[in-house]
Length: 449
Image (cartoon, rainbow, N blue to C red):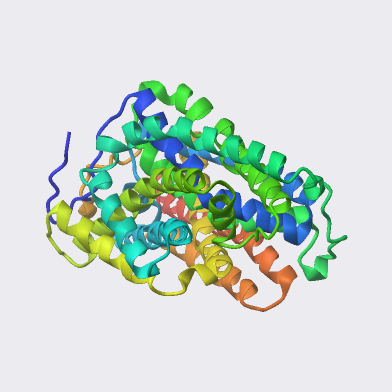
C-alpha cells in the first residue's frame, strides 16, 4: 500500500513486510565494514580487553533501547519522520529528517569509499572511476524502496559474507601463525584526563552510531504489529548487535593484529583483506558493502526526499530523488570526508543521542498514561508547528554535547557523548511535566467554580 501525500501529509511510504523478509532486510546492516574497522581502531587505542568490555556494555544498551523503539514503531507503523512530528512539531520534525538523511548519506559515502579503494587495490586505475562504478551499480538495487529488493539481496549475500570472513580468519592464521598478540594488546592504563578508562571511551565512541536507533524505527515501521515479539527478540535486539558489533569487532581486531602491515584505518582493513586473499578478499568486501549500502542509500534518499518535499515543496518522481541522492553521494566521495569520520561520529552522537533520549522519555510517559498515538497518515496540520519541549531539549542538549566535544579535551569529548542523552531526557521530562501542570491548573480552577 503506497500513500499519495497531499501538501500537508508526510511523504514516507509504509508497506508491511513479513517477519522473515524484514529480518533479512535489516540484517544487511550487520555487514558494515565500519564495524570491523572501528573495533580494531578502538583496540589499538585502548587495548583489546577494555574494548571488549566496552563492546559488551554497548551491545546490552543497544539491544535494550532498540527493543523499545522497534516495538513502538511496529505497533503504530511510525517512521522517524512521522514520530518526530509528535516530539518536535511538524516544522521541528524537518530537522530530524535532515539529520537522518545527512547521516545515512555520510555512511553511504564512507562505505562506498572503502569498496572503491578495494577495487583500486586489486585492479589499479583512478579512484574516481571506481567511486562512480560503486554508485552506479547501487542505484538499481535501491530503486523502488527497501521492501522491493533488500530482503532478497541480503538473503543471497549473507552466507558469502560470513563465510568469507571465516575464511579470512583461517587464511590469516595459517599465513601468519605468530599473530597471537591480538587478545593481549594493551597500551597501558588510560587516565580519565586522557579520555579513559578505555572501556568508557569505547562506549562513548559507539554512541556516535546511535543513528542505528533511527534506522531501527524506519525499518520496523515496515513490519506487522503481530510480529512484535519476533522482531524484538531476533531482528532488532541483542542477537543482531552481538553479531554486528561483537563478532565483527573481534574479526577486525584479530585480522589487524595478525596480518603484518594491516592498519586500523578507514581503508586499512579492506586493503589488508585484498592483499591477503586477492580476488576472494575483494569479493568479501564487495558483498559487505553492497549489503550495508543498499540500506544506507535507501534510508538516506528516502529522508532526503521527505525533507525536500515537505520543506522545499519539491514534487519530483522517486527516481529523480534517487538520482539526486546518488549524485550527492558521488560528489562527497570525491572529498576527504572519511578522514573526519571520528569527528563526524562525535557530532552525530551529540545530535542523534538527544533525539533518541527524547523519544524514549515520550514513549515511557505515553504508555504510562495511556495516551492516544497520532497515526503516521495524519496531516501536518494536526500537529503544532513546533513542540517547544522537544525542540528545546534537543537543541540545548546537542549544543552542550558539541561544546564539550569541541573543547579539545579528551575527557570532555567522551563526557559530551555520554551526557547529551541524559541532559536531553531530563530537559524534555521536566518541560512536558511543567506543560501538563500548566494545562491541568486552569482546568482544576474551572472545575472548582
